[in-house]
Length: 457
Image (cartoon, rainbow, N blue to C red; front, side, top):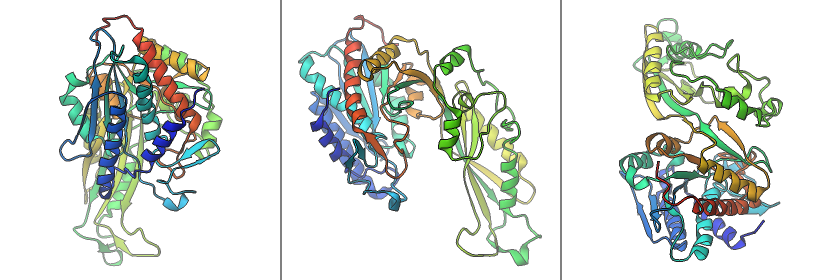
């Protein structure tokens, strides 16, 4: 495999920028990261580059080079923002001082998503030297700085600028191989509906000795509500109408799943849980990829410090996420959740349900020609045909690309399962970075050989 040491050095500079989108004190770092991206795009001989903000959000970078009206157009997506680094004391080396050891790059954003985004930018630079003044493939890029904090800017802009983003396919490198040496491509992702519940009781925090037993504790009411969201015996979600519109697991899904070397024992070991659990009648792989789920992601209320404080809190809350399969409508399910928890609220408290974010699920035909081209590129570089999988996670922008703009999405990621995304000591294998550059080049080369005049779908 070809190596790119000069590109590795540039990536290290990119990783030194602490572009944490959720923390306001890093606003200037987000601008620096966007400028870094725009400079690399121009370095690939793409001069039509715009850096702009939507409603004061972190910068978007849009670029295009459209040399050949009869050739396919690929829309390349990535994000330059990263997660916070907490707990920083668990990092072996500083998160924004990238460190190379044992063939890996350790830094925040190395795999999610700066390292993978950089494979696109450097592949284009290499190809620009070969293709010369007239490129055989039309290229558009949209790079954001809010993926880790909701993606409000790109969602609004993309829906308002569908014509500018029109393409034959979209390419996203923000996923991982199933395991080292075995590439994979997602043909389906779950959607998400994320809400925060707030239970309001007394007008202020109360002394539990003076008021305990006389007013309802919001935490007790919240516990009752949460207990009735799931049937722990069957694994079924109890929100009325939740399963309306859920498409069954298909024969194609089961055929593809049979090719996936999924080890439920290894899955359990990696989770650290004492036992497997989930919806009865489905395999573990089906539960986490092709069936919907509901989880409580956080609880708050009352005294959280060390020791005792005898208090009845005035408020309590929970964050609840629902992972959705295609054809489930997140707006509909958020309404059903709100109606249900409101009905469950006992006398003495009120419940508010606030939407945090949402996205539909995605399901595509893995035999479409663009996915076949991407699969061929991965096999050519990494020596093994990729396995087609469904993923239980959500990438909201992919919903806009596929559902709203009508293009297939190529999830051609180069991470590995042990990269530690969102965790201390995040890393990316240097060989995966180099292989990613090669695979993107091979994909664009294959698209260049597609029949001229292929319509944009």
